[in-house]
Amino acid sequence: MFHIVDDTNPICKIVTAMLKRLGYETISFGCPEDYISFVNSPGFKDPMAVFTDITMPAMTGYQMMNIISELKPDLRFIVMTAAPEIRSEHAIKACMYLVKPITLKNLTKVVGSLSKCHAFSPTYDHKCTSVDDRRVFPIEGWSCPHRCEESCSS
Image 1: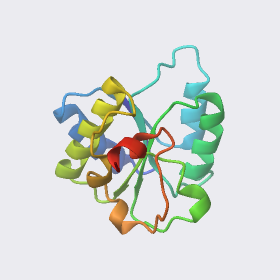
Image 2 (image 1 turned 90 degrees about the horizontal axis):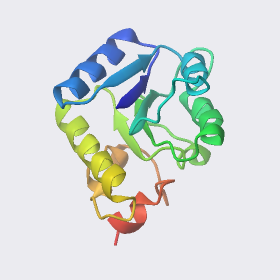
Image 3 (image 1 turned 180 degrees about the vertical axis):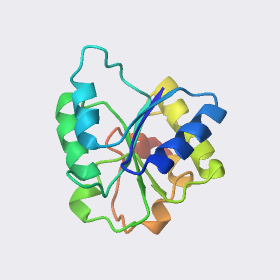
Image 4 (image 1 turned 45 degrees about the vertical axis):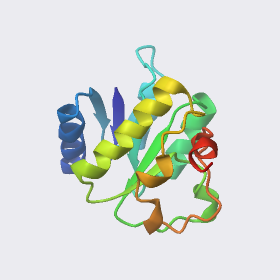
């Protein structure tokens, strides 16, 4: 199961369709506030990861990640953005980064790595440094908040 947070409905639909094609269930949300409410609801179940946009009207994806990380520190985030500029204080928020438009090929690699991390723990060498679009992002000294990078870089 994956959760998707993006204020652009067509993006939610496209990412949902690609994840379903890969055999995964999804729940999508049009704004961070709705997702935060869902996280606080009794019916919430942890997803394998949350795919989130960054630039949204009332709250950025980074602000949402800060709030949710306080509630659910083990939740993994994958940033999806058309603007890969990341200030250094935000670089440690997500496990992986994808540049829009997202391709099925890139999504397949990311989901495969997330699945391994989820199934075998973050210490399993699942080559996460080679599956996302981080080369496009100005992320120096970045490491996954869930320690995935420690095993991947060794």
